[in-house]
Image (cartoon, rainbow, N blue to C red; front, side):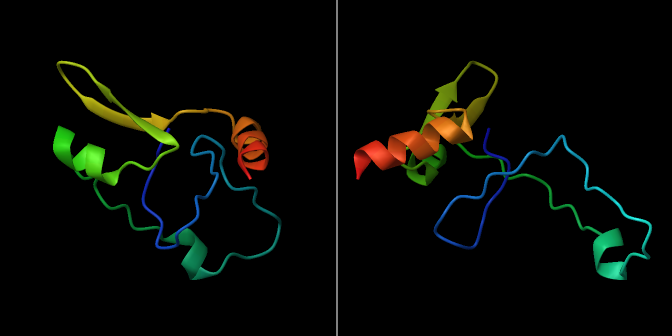
Length: 84
């Protein structure tokens, strides 16, 4: 699943369902406050422009979704090694 945008050219593998492990140390204020930006609604044309060669666009009557072709991060690494 594509979760958000990254300012760099490479992809970041993240798991949005895992919470950050906290230690017994005090937290800085930068870790406590995380601003959430609402998602952008993309039309079909915008989604097709936005997607890369390793991503696909799923279109249903109610939604336009973007996702990776290979869902597993290890499968993506293996495919990248085979490709070159």
